[in-house]
Length: 232
Image (cartoon, rainbow, N blue to C red; front, side):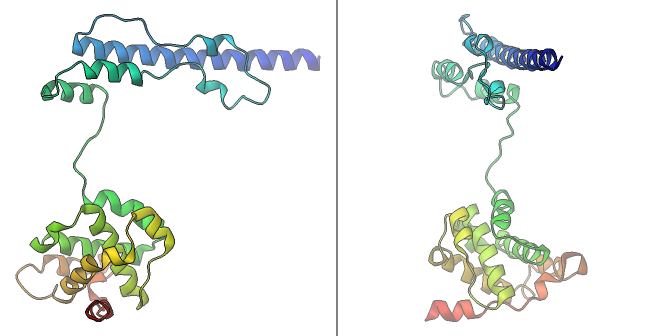
């Protein structure tokens, strides 16, 4: 009886793998057919591998069985796109919309979440970092820095402000791709913005981050020692 049960379980598992593979292959067929209809490309045979559906998976390869059922259509898709004209922007937009790709220009916010996670941030560090970023967004001199550098420099400056000393770990440097020396110029400018945030015409960011809702981040003492280190 135990042998019959194991055979039934194995048969059910194989049937599940086969159905999953066939479903993935059908999804690829539909996606490629939609792209061909947009581009008006001639019909070509589908690049689907039947080998994964016919071969029995090994005893210890259950986790990999679902990934063997079909071949991706990336090469076929790239070959079709290569035949189109580069200046045909509306056609490219239609393809991107059909594939449901979400595309946007890079902003500091795109990098802040990843960099804050690498820094092991808490709520206080997160609020102070966003305060420095928003100060940078309304200052013309900060336009020369890339969004990724603004995000990394904001986190670096916030860490120095909260810790009272230079703080930039190897993990942060690995994930941001910026060393402490590379961030120093941008960071010192953020410290100057922090010092003058309560004065001038554009004080909205300072008022916003002076409330309890945003942890009174604007009331933190600026990391003036970074300016002294830069001058030295």
